[in-house]
Length: 261
Image 1 (cartoon, rainbow, N blue to C red):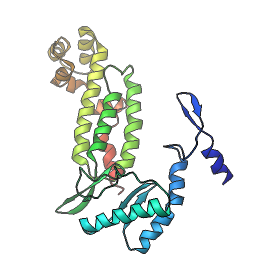
Image 2 (cartoon, rainbow, N blue to C red):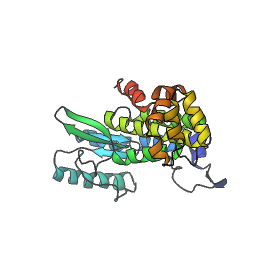
Image 3 (tube, helix red, strand yellow):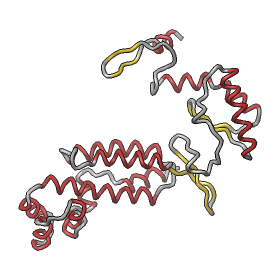
Image 4 (cartoon, one colour):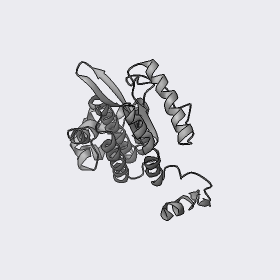
């Protein structure tokens, strides 16, 4: 208990400045979910006694009901229990009733649920996809990439962590689309770094591209996106060659992770 007390009173650092903590635990700290699990155990036991299916991760809670009317009653009674018995404040804006299949309204820990002829399946929520692609876009930006090798390593570290978390979800088509898009962005970064036309032509020829195709691509005045879609670039910067240089193939990585579920 003394260790927990010292942790809570240790303060937080923002932009190099330490600030005292008057109440609560630091957001995002490793103590916060631990304390939530301890304190909300009473909540779990209460709704277990009532026969209500309850899924909780730290302070993110999902209670399941068979109808909309029953879910509204559950929302009222659970809020009353949290605020009355446990003296907690419920975020009314985030607390609502929704069908677990309504992808716009239901999101839990970055996941959503889907339903098809084969049954129910887990999928990545659109907001999580958007955040993932935005981060990959930043890591593969032509303006920010100085070293291809370093950028590929950063992408690998981030994408591997993301896939280890979301690997349980069904996303074969989506991950293949993002994988192809990311390959193309890396080709653009490499193409930009070659800069001069003569350097581009020379490197393409070294990579096995016929001289006429290499000359056409190297001296093209079209934009990076268009040029790196040409036969010459794809012939030189094959997937195999990029993977051997450190590219983290998302589709292959997803298959190896997803097969374990």
